Image 1: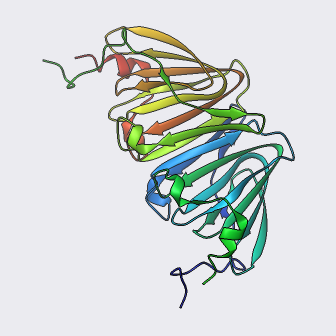
Image 2: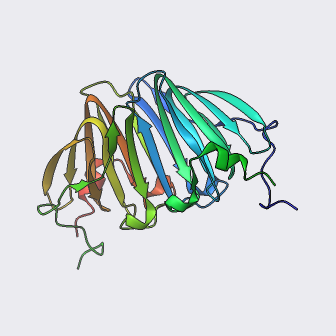
Length: 139
Length: 139
């Protein structure tokens, strides 16, 4: 029996599209709670990241996230403890749903900006920052 | 008697500080629901705005917002129907609380990025886009 209820199949993960409103006056990236697959408790934006820098390198026990590209490009690698790996090349207005027990590595290119919406309040105990520990979460 | 319950005094409005986490790997701007003065229903980010461009030019009947500067500079002018006007020069990590019946004009400088958190779902009927109509909202 799995130690954990489940982790998700990554092979059929689809990118999501956020309708960014862009014109000569700028871009507006909206986030409406009622359109999200969970009730958000917090969000964050990551920006001013040197091109080529990779951030993330952790998974969560409980937190689900919607990871969106506001601007530039983001390469997001997701791995699950079962050994599945998928890579997404997100452009402006594209997003993915990251589930619990999915290790994420996010590489910022072309002045990429990441917007993340989270299903939980911040709790350091929810973070898995050691990759060996992450793999041990296999059922 | 006022037509509307109240509009807020602007003369004592203080800027708020958001603890942006910045280092050589970039900046992380957090938003935690439990720290907000209302339960957020949506948010948006405005960016790629030409320097010197002014956006906004509307007020709300019900919506409260936390308007934050993620990057660059934002000049935010708030006016109430009573004739009070205040101007805020926000830098990275500074924010203001905008109440209902406060007309906002936001000028973007130095590649400014605006983050807005809203107390209501989007509803076009909540918007006051005509300044004469806005002034008529005086009590």
